[in-house]
Image 1 (cartoon, one colour):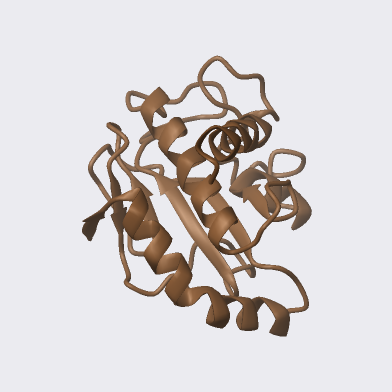
Image 2 (cartoon, rainbow, N blue to C red):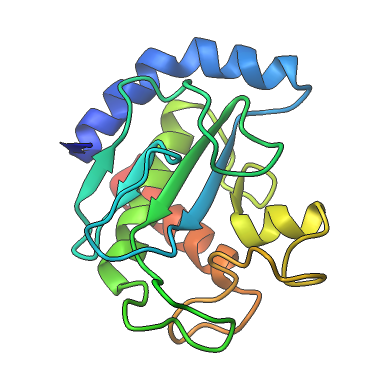
Length: 180
């Protein structure tokens, strides 16, 4: 894992833009950002995700190529970028466990989404920026059915079902505020 800044995220996105769009178009869709939590510990990062965000908002990448296909979202990895918060060890659908998502993690995730959407020419909406819970619901293994995957279905202080909307709204705010 390599520590990286938002400016370096911009550079990686610029470098991979053509190839990731080609992958997505071969799958008949736009590039998609999938948002996760790792269900691990703070400071524990996984290669399944392109980008890992620690409890303090620090950003780490598992690759120098954001177009590299990673195993982050079942049947949805081609032409997609997986972004995970390093948190939620021992979480349940009613309790985030001893290592919940931090405010700084959520803010940094929103900043990363804003930057990637700007560089990759993506609209910040639920079709192109999707939580794992939202994707899992589309494939019948999310909160609406088996609840096998419910990443970011909700956040501390945010109602169930509103995690994705919260992050997307924050990303829209960062994009507007910073002119990203």
